[in-house]
Length: 201
Image 1: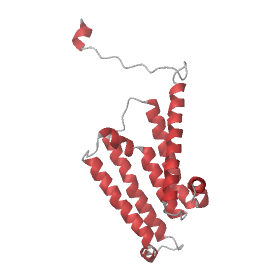
Image 2: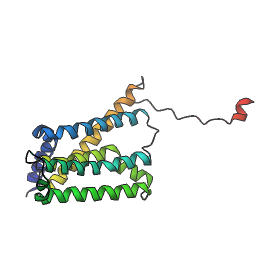
Image 3: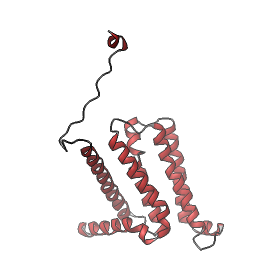
């Protein structure tokens, strides 16, 4: 494929990812909570910029992949209208996806539980935007049948970048709202606390 054709294909796949909840309304029940959680977490850390995610929150975020794998199995279970274990066993591809996703979730939980990654890297990888966007893309592949190929991978990266920039803009707007001076306002650095003995003197 020519570069322009690839770019067009990635853009079309990106649109498919965005419109996925409207294509399959069952996905709304999982996609909407992910979106709401991501926005509120972003707003929170936009207001309290000096706070860090925390290992406990990062550990909780890794479990999102486990919940998504269970959601995929549930979706396959009712794929024929009536629940049946045969629906799961007959769909080998998505069953494999769900099991691999559960294994990846267990691995991520292990990594975060024992603090095996540098703190800053772990807090970025397992913060709400990367985790929830990844979960959203995986669900889109199952619910709407989006092909698993390099076009989808490129569209997923583009989707993440757009979401990431939008969330950063939201944080910046919130920061501006807290400063009457506007966008050029500088945040005041917290003053060092004096010792109690010095305060008494």
